[in-house]
Amino acid sequence: METVVSGIRPTGNLHLGNYFGAVKSFVKMQDEYNCLFFIADWHSLTTRPKPEDIVESTRIILAEYLACGIDHEKATIYMQSDVKETLELYLYFNMNTYLGELERVTTFKEKARKQPDNVNAGLLTYPTLMAADILQHRAVKVPVGKDQEQNMEMARHCARRFNNMYGVEFFPEPQSYYFSDKALKVPGLDGSGKMGKSEGNCIYLRDDAKTITKKVMKAVTDGGPTAQNSEKPEVIQNLFTFLSMVSEKETYDYFDEKWNDCSIRYGDLKKQIAQDIIKYTDPIRERIVEYSANIDLMDKIAKEGAEKAHESAAKTLKEVRQIMGFRELY
Ligand code: TRP
Image 1 (cartoon, rainbow, N blue to C red):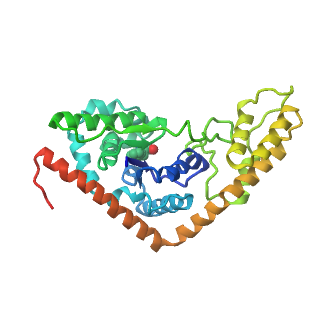
Image 2: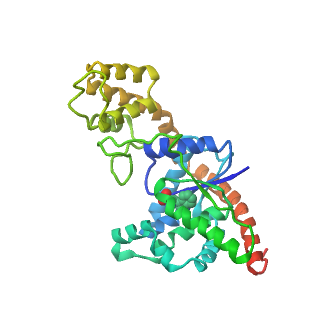
């Protein structure tokens, strides 16, 4: 069975963009692949989070993953910082990666611009840590967003260079796995193309009914259709995308007809969208609340995940040490 690895930085709650863009597909993948989903808490250190925030935010993501249907019996869910083998591989990859290569990564350049007073080595070596995350499990598929392509190129580089240096065929070259053709791109409600944390236009899975309604009712619209059967401008198409995600087909068709004969009332449309988002996310929200309150269970699941991930990584590192000429430790 092919191995899939994906990490998420614990920078806040999951929103509908995360859900329809990735997490929903993870739930499907866990039946078809050997999946390891981890919470990239080490990666979050590039921005110096407070210890209590780390505890809180990692637990939240774990609860949200479980609430969305990621099953810790099928997939391995773990905290990055629980598997120390990652660091050993990170060191080896750092030794084989040139400064120039790392400096050319656009996400590094962007981050350096954003936090000029904290351009630390961790920021620079973000891609080699990510490569270690992936290759410690010898994963072949990595579900990521398009913005991660350069990091993925670096991961393939690390694999290839290691293989070449030691004349082995040890690491597979991991491929990016885009959901975009299978999953829905969730638009923003503010007229911007995409729902995202940095865009500040998110509906979070844990938002309550009132918050969701307020956000949806504020969605940007236009003056209304002026001719029958006209093409929908982007902001209106965005609203219909929401309908297609969370509403019944009849509801979609109803509003589509109203659009086509120019009798659509955006207020009604938004009310319907809000109502259907609430209906869709309600059970997820309930489970989030349940899981987050059960700290013992969260810790137990994280610990079990860490053990499984450790086992997988230790196996790889044992062979890596042998290949490189280091003594066998255990
Ligand atoms: N860099 C990824 C992001 O920002 C998170 C991440 C870290 C990751 N390590 C990974 C994703 C390994 C996939 C595989 O989204």
